[in-house]
Amino acid sequence: MNDMILQIDLPALLIATMAAIICSLCGAFLVLRRQALMSDALSHVVLPGIVTGYLVSGTIAALPMLLGALGACLLAVSLMALIRRVRIIESGAIMGIVFTTLFALGVLLLEQKVGGRVHLDAHHALYGALELTYWPGIFTPDMWQTMPADMPLLFFVMLAVTMLVLVFYKELKLATFDPLLAQGQGLRPAWVSAGLLALSAVGCVAAFQAVGSILVIALFICPAACARLLTSSLAGYLCCSASCAILMAVIGYGLAATAPLWLGIPAALSAAGMIAVTGGVMVALAACYTSRT
Image (cartoon, rainbow, N blue to C red; front, top):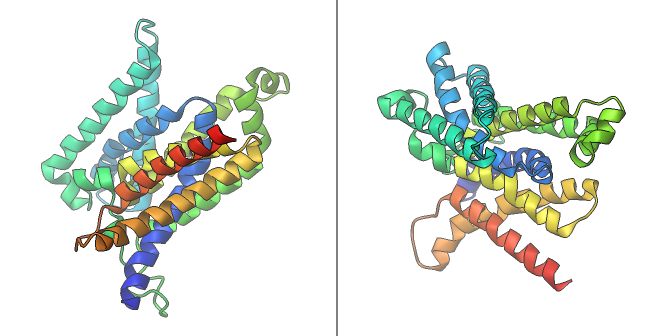
């Protein structure tokens, strides 16, 4: 039992926690900028990019997958900008058109047996593969050779996102709350917005294969929504968003493994689904707390 916890549950929790920190920090600014649905779009458009990266390179290495997904994100942003020129169509509808079309294209590619060769299928694209995480050599001399493939990428992306948010904290704050003041001080809010979207795209790509599209969306929005209800300062808001995301991942994963046993059901629940549900419950509790104070 202890070996199972160390080899399966602990690595899955680490991956879920790192994905939670990445998505919550990027999502915090998207929620403040009223661009929360952009996380939904990004989490869908990365799928055809990942598959295309494999088709072009013939390998499942992280770099071609990342480049393919970033290319898909750039394509989506370009298509939205092009369609937006037709002023009759509302911006939310434009996002819906683009991301559903590209996601459907990715699913079609997977249906043609591409997904079997890149260890990804439509089910994993939606729900992730946290339950399949396995680290047989953890706490052994060859632990680095047996580490799950998603873990190093998530770790470095988590460090990069955290450092970039800290380094460009002032620029992100000005461009989010007062773009005109930011422009008057020599900043370019459009560049800051583009950088934030690019960073969000990288975070989305890093988390997508491990936790799936549904959980990526939940991790982008739910922790930020909780933090928005509980705090008023930007620094506290970012810390609270990351903390809520970690709680969401730990509690949700724990409930997915243990709740069925309490009910006498032998099979565990979907980890990604339970974490997303936990995020929704946390937002509801935060809203209740805020309404009472």
